[in-house]
Image (cartoon, rainbow, N blue to C red; front, side, top):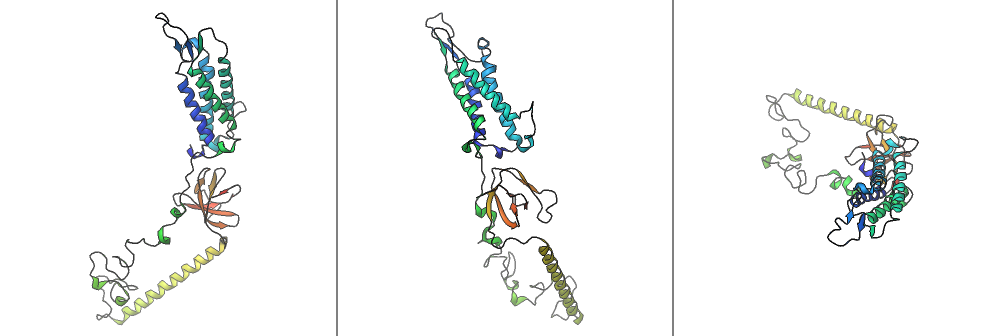
Length: 323
């Protein structure tokens, strides 16, 4: 069930159905009678005397609205579902027009001293709105507009400062815990800075284990050689990782040089493929009525970002609406 797939026309259909249900409890006929023997001078549509006004006007109109909304809630999954050659929303349009036709005919005739009450007139108004919204929901642009759009602010997709700590947070220069400044409970004289690079546990030096000699405190010469070998091995691993990343990036389509992130919406639900495997299983779905952020362009495809931060490749970019 996708609530964001509802349009303003669907909202008008739902509101008209609620108004029609309320009208069924209001006086449908009123009798102009005065005196102590007149008794009840009004009756609503639920009275059996007015049969078949209730099923042909009120219940038929409410059923029409229900069929239209059920079709909208099911979305693309119900496009090919038909009953006797018609979709649910098409049956709803036909029922709404039939209910309006019955309501208009019920306003005619009558006897002297008997007139239509507010329930009859309110039912006609509700059915006019219902039939108009149902029939014109896919034709009038104003009724095709999504009911709810949750376009976020552009700055919400990126952390403050481009991923760096915000002012006043740990890691900010001058704050406890930053490089060169003591953390909570740490001796200021032992802060990790370039001046203490030769101390155990300093920047670029491993923390000595229990029982291990400390540089500058009488350790054998082979310890320094082992440290040099470890540093060379780490440099070789970093170089191999850099070459592997460069090779992987060369195999993927290069992003457009003049590309700038932008917001967009899709006209129909579309799947997102994984960034590193465009033919893999979908990692998400884009639905109409929601704005998404395009963070990269790969040829004719876009790399889109969902609200939870998930990114994937949108191969079908036809008909998208840029924000």
